[in-house]
Amino acid sequence: DGAEFALGLKCAKTYCRAMRPLRALVIYLVVVFIGGALLAPWLYRLAQTVGYSFPQIASAPFHRFVNRSLLILALAGLWTLLCALGATSWRETGLVQLHGQWKKLSGGLLLGFVSLAVVAGTAIGGGDRVFVQGLTAHKIVGTISNAIATAAIVATLEEILFRGGIFGGLRRILHWPLALIASSMIYALVHFLQRTEFTGAVAWNSGLVLLPRMLGGFADFHALVPGFFNLTLAGILLGLAYQRTGNLYFSIGLHAGWIFWLKTYGAFTTSAPRAAIWFWGTGKLIDGWLALIVLVITLVVFKFLPLKPAREPFAISR
Image (cartoon, rainbow, N blue to C red; front, side, top):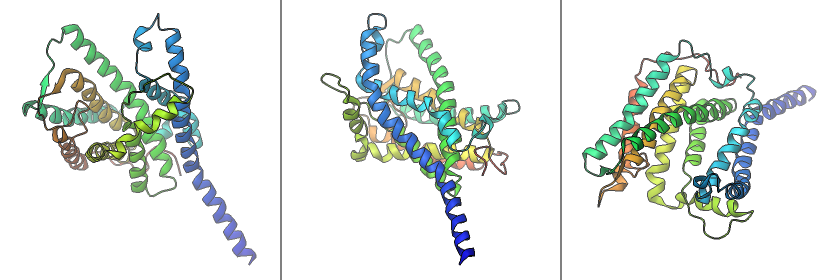
């Protein structure tokens, strides 16, 4: 009986240690979403206070302040989350030294750029997207420069968070394919927030009121399918890249290639009259059935890429 009790106690301790990453992840998500909703009104009021100096920021719709608040808290708590998941260095999140990793970074960038270029080119060639008229050279150069900068920054930060942190942490308590699906769905959830207008005076709880509306896409079948599925599949592709290569550089390149098109496609093109948006997608580019087809093909192509598999990815050591 004593031996059985000791064994049970040992198993209980092991289970508790294994569940710590999941508990840390749940707390992190609650803090980001609820805390971000509560922070948004304060950021909005601050923007109105300094509106005379930054009129563009002050005139932004309230839902953007909710989005920015979520991002601020997500970044502010990123290292705390990674530490709670067991990371002791950036190397354990997949950020190994860049030296010798340029081939992975450029390979991912090329795959991401080409895959969504196929979607954009097909939609434009099919006549369901047309170029915006009257764009100046200054506007074009500015949009492309902004897209490049955004792609580099956002891709790096999101891959550290979603792949190096969340996927890496979930692998400690789940079989890696299950961890991959779970982390990809969390990634899709965050990116599935809709732009929802808020009317009336902004109060302390306005973010809490608006947040459920921003998740309203889950009640819209045409938005959910294939939009949410596309985002989940994109997360799976990024996670597989991390799993196969052992670090984040291919994932960062792949993600950056996608973001570049997401930022330029909507700025330079618009839907043609009577376009079949359900198939071709909107200015978001990845919310139509065409994008789903291309992502599936990209997944097949990726499977046969000559990437050197790592025996143990540098996520979080077991």
